Figure 1: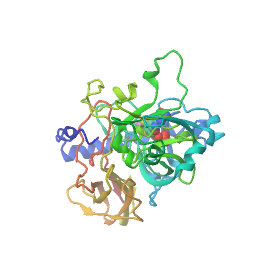
Figure 2: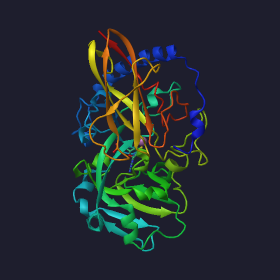
Figure 3: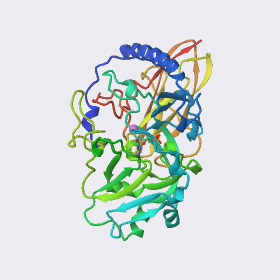
Figure 4: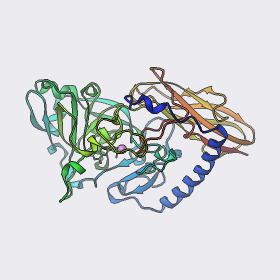
Length: 398
Ligand SMILES: Nc1nc2c(c(=O)[nH]1)N[C@H]1C(S)=C(S)[C@@H](COP(=O)(O)O)O[C@H]1N2
Ligand SMILES: [Mo]
C-alpha cells in the first residue's frame, strides 16, 4: 500500500485518555465476541486446525487467536488463518498433486505445465508473512464491512517452490510489454453469475517476480487444500489476496485483470466511496507489529512482554515497546534467528510492573525508516491498519 501516502496524514484527533477508554471497551467487546465464536465448529476442510488456537468467524474466515502466536517465529499449519472468497475446491484436487495443470501465458513460449514438470525446473524456499488486507479491521471505528479481524489474519509461513524467474526463463522469458503478473484461482465458479464478478484473479506489478514462487510445500508439507494446494502463487511482501491459491493460470499481462476483485475490490478509498481502478490497490504491505503477551492480566513483578513485528515489503529494523500508552518507549530485543526480509520477528522486552493498569503498545520501524503511525486514517473497507495505538492492550497487574 506504499502508493497511498495520503492515508497516513489525517485523523490525529483522538486524545490519549479517550483512546485508553476505547481500548478497554473494545477489548471487552472482543472477549464476548470471541466466546460466542468458540461455539462455532471448524468446517470439514479445516477440521485439522487447532480449535483452541483459532476463532471461526465463518466457514471461509478463520482467525488465529492473539495469544496463540508463539515466540519461535513460525506459524504452525494448525493455527494459521484461512480466508476464502469462494468455497474451497474439492479434496479431489490434492489426490494426485503432480497432475495439477498450470497454464503459463505472457512468456515467449507459453504452455501448460503439470506440477510434476514444474518441480523439475528448480526450487527455492522463503519465509514470508501472509496477511489479509483486512487484518486489523476490527480496530476501525466506522464499522467497515467484512470480517472483523483483529490481529490474527496473519501468519509467518515457510514456503518451497519454483521461483517465477526460473519458470519465465524456462519458457523463453517474459514477452514484451508485460507490466503485471496475473494469477488465477482454480475454484469452480457458481453458475449464473458473471465470472468476472466472482473469480479470484489478481494482478501485481511485474517487479514482484523477483521474490515470487510457485509453491507446493508449506511448513514442510505439501500445501494443504485450505491454503491453496496443490499449487499456490506466493508473493513475499504483498498482501494475502495477491497470493492466489489453487493457481491454474499464471500470466504476464499488459494490463491488470478485469476481475472485480482487481478493478474495484481491494482498493483503498475514503469512507463512503465506491471502489475504482484509480485508487491504490492492496499490493505491498507496510511495517506492523503487535503485542501477544501479556494481553489482559499479569502478576506484579517481572514480566516478559512478547510480540511479533515485520516490515512488510522491507525487513523490520527495530521495535519499541511502551507500558504507559506511548508516553515513553524502550527498545525491545528480537528473539531467535533472523528469518529474512519478508518474515516477521518475535520480540521481547523484560519489564518489572507494580500493581496497576498499563497500556502496552509496540511500534516497529522498517529498514527504510518507516515507523508505524500512532493513528491510521479510516478507509471504506478497513484495509491496512497498522496504527500502534489501536493495537495496544490494557493490562491489569495485581
Ligand atoms: N484462489 C484463491 N486464492 C486466494 C483467496 C481465495 O479466495 N481464492 N483468498 C485470498 C485472500 S483474500 C487471502 S487473505 C489469502 C488467505 O490465505 P490463507 O487462507 O492460506 O490464509 O489467500 C488469497 N488467495
Ligand atoms: Mo484477504
